[in-house]
Amino acid sequence: QQKAAVEAETRASVIEEWAALAEQAEVQCTALQRERDIFRDQALKTATELEAYTAQQEHQQQERAAADAAAGARQSELGQQNDDLQAELRRLEKVCADLRQECGNLREQLLRADGTLAERSALLERQMAVLAGVQEQCHTLEQERDELQIQLHRVNAELADRATLLEQAQATLAKTNAA
Image 1: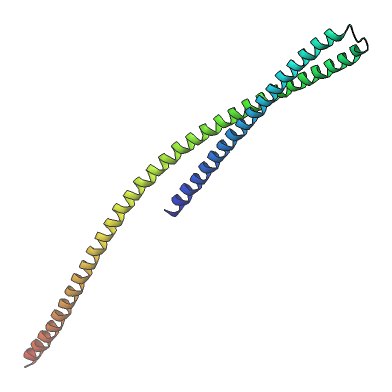
Image 2 (image 1 turned 120 degrees about the vertical axis):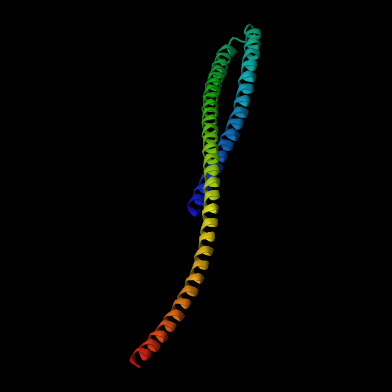
């Protein structure tokens, strides 16, 4: 019983840990999704800024010839920022997908553990019922044993009384035979 209780308690602890891991993975996934959304917004904003900046530079190109070099550098920098943000966005989406997969795997493990625990709980209940029946039979047999011991003591007492009477009768018979 204690071993089964320890096993059940251990399984319950493992299930709680798995549930906590699954919940933690969900939280991390949600945080990564928020971060991905922020990076996406930044990428869109940067792309919009890049387009606006490029249009402004093209308009002012006739007035400022020297600004061409600065505009090209800024455009390259924004393009690199955009590329970097897109790469980071793809990385975060991959991490998020991996976390979703891990979360799904943990849920499957949790479902299997729940099923195993339910089966073992049912088995334990059946064993407990059998044990209760055996204990009841033991109790009944102990009562029968006690009753038989009482009867045995009575029979022994009667035999002792009869043995005494027999000895007395033999002694009387011996006296009678001697006389």
